[in-house]
Image (cartoon, rainbow, N blue to C red; front, side):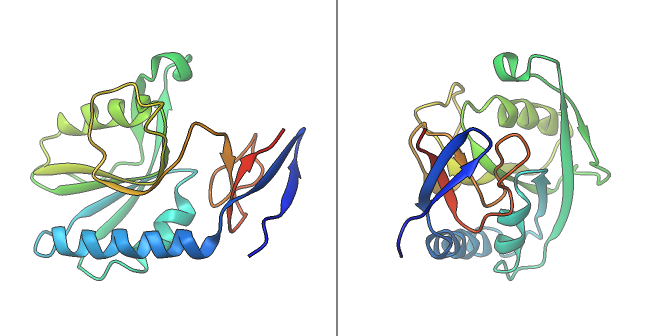
Length: 180
């Protein structure tokens, strides 16, 4: 497929990961999750807004019995530098003794996931893992293992497939990286 260039707000983006590769990698993740959670009936916690496309495509391919819930995170004002998650909005399920898999669109610094993991562990689940579409290992600022990663990428700004740039680009089928 031929890469294409698009304009979002003041920046130019070029195709970085085509939808076909995204789906192939998500299919591999689903197969691994099916194997790892075969007898566990996991609860998937989808972190909105960015994860919605990833969640949809992943869960269509997960064949084991499971539940899904959508959560949002409320953070302290300076989220980008502190990463402190104030509260989890929308978590109505009791996760005590449950196997929980957090579904994220992207993990870069890890601040958000780290804060979420801390809060969830206080609720005594049997286990908590993270599945993410994209991960920027060079940006990670916390000592944590992300078990399910569809694809690692360099520290480039990306949009599409659920990821946005100031509200735009979430609906794009491919992932685009910034050119200028």
